[in-house]
Image (cartoon, rainbow, N blue to C red):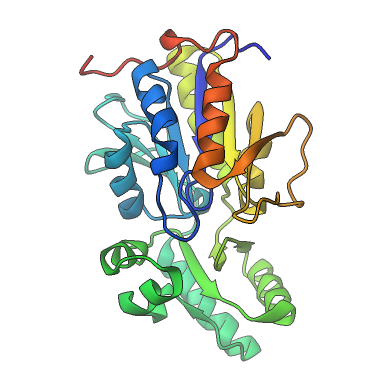
Length: 285
């Protein structure tokens, strides 16, 4: 496989670039360093909040756009994109492109679903940071960041009957649910794929046509993987692949989580044409 156009990589976090139980990314450190040195954009595309993603962007030395809360919004750093972004609103150091429903709309919908169905739904808005930490294995500080939600509400749902009822009522209210690694997520009409396309349009304007890669681990990443040129699936911690992800041209990494991510990026960078000049230049270079 040759790569003839500038390369842009989109990546999930939990279970993909981050190890599922410990949230460690150190087995991917080598490939992360290669992307920084070659100036190849890495766009994080996750169910995590802006506050959570900012922590990892700092650790990865990443200054590229990122996608939060299952496609709820795109954030574009003003520092590197100093002109107005189409559809963007200036919020602090970012242009925010909102694609999902606001959080207060989602909480009103949860209350309505409870009223209409009798389901005892519990979401992050109902939990203290300590309880989120216990459910997820996050530190207390990271749990606080996980509660700073803007476009997506993670819900604890029990059994297929509750799942089906929740999904049906979400549709009635013009919303969607998707299944993550630990929770069901209630959100608006946006998804990772729609957000990826918005980011690709920005890079097309900056670099001309680009080659896009998506790396994920589960069906929650399917919209992202469908929206890119080269979809990559890493293994689950037990060494299996999510059989709900089956796409033409799918690359299956031979390892789970960050180890599979590291292999995937190194494999991509070994392809003809994926050289140093393909990324967007940094302002501090």
